[in-house]
Image (tube, rainbow, N blue to C red; front, side, top):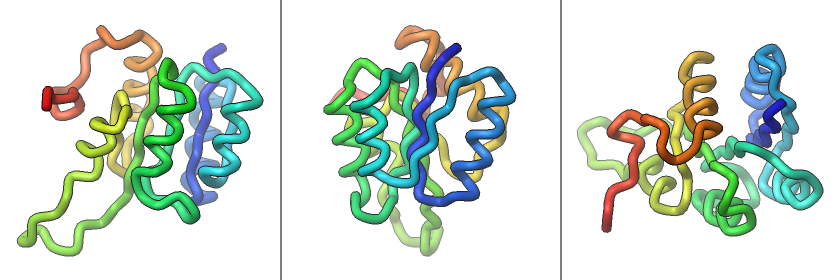
Length: 140
């Protein structure tokens, strides 16, 4: 049974992901922030990590960078529900930046259960699994 670490400070998002994944047969560890997520990562082994980009006490990409540095072999899926202020103004592509910091895949909230499950299965299948072009890393 694949073990999934979910790190999200929003209790509703975390609980929803936890229930969905448990119903699909995954062993889920849900944590409410970067510190508790890192503690879980040090205490257990996981097959995939789902990490929210923006959480209190770990600003922005600090969480993605630290989780990837602590466990570089574990596929990391970055999640973001960042609402852009205006479509007319250029906004940074936070999910693309997360890929550059070590995320294997990215999900923009809100995402569908199917999108979540497909992304997790791609990560479990390994780096050779197919991914939509927008999710692949680009060479610098």
